[in-house]
Image (tube, rainbow, N blue to C red; front, side):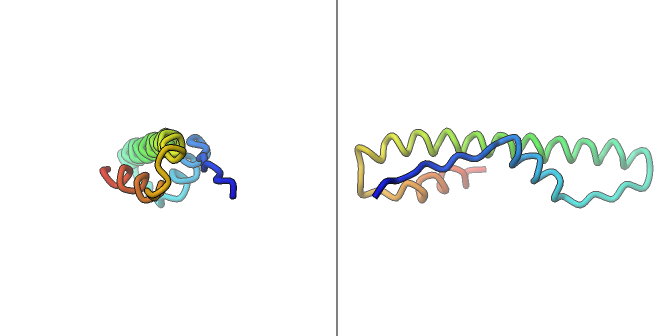
Length: 82
């Protein structure tokens, strides 16, 4: 059975995540706050996806050496440090 790596498109993931956040804009102050929140959401999601891809690549490489460790459990434990 061939094991395939999962690769997340960080840009698409971050954009979709940012779009999913509901923001209410009632004044010009809210526009700036909303823009900052959207940017923070985008950047956070982008870098989490990149971290996932890097961890996936490193664990996939290690998987060839160690067959008894769950790769995705290790990836999730690393990502849960956020």
